[in-house]
Length: 67
Image (cartoon, rainbow, N blue to C red; front, side, top):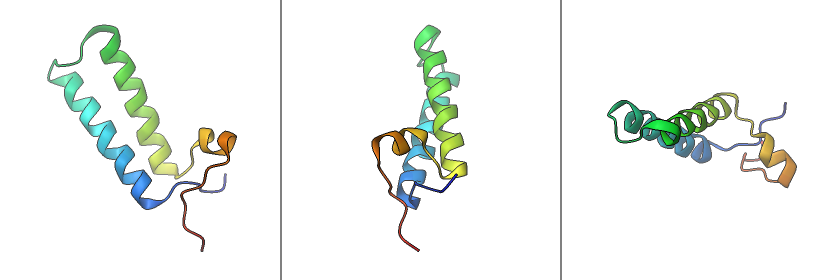
């Protein structure tokens, strides 16, 4: 897997994931919406860690700076 996510994109995804997790555990997001938020947070965190987003590949996007 060739990285296709830049640093800014990764940081934004991690922040959104952290907010979603915090909202779930404080009880703001509950039920089905809360579970969906946790799943999205997990996907965002995983893609941020590996610097690869499969959807970016499908749509031909690349935010990774050229090295």
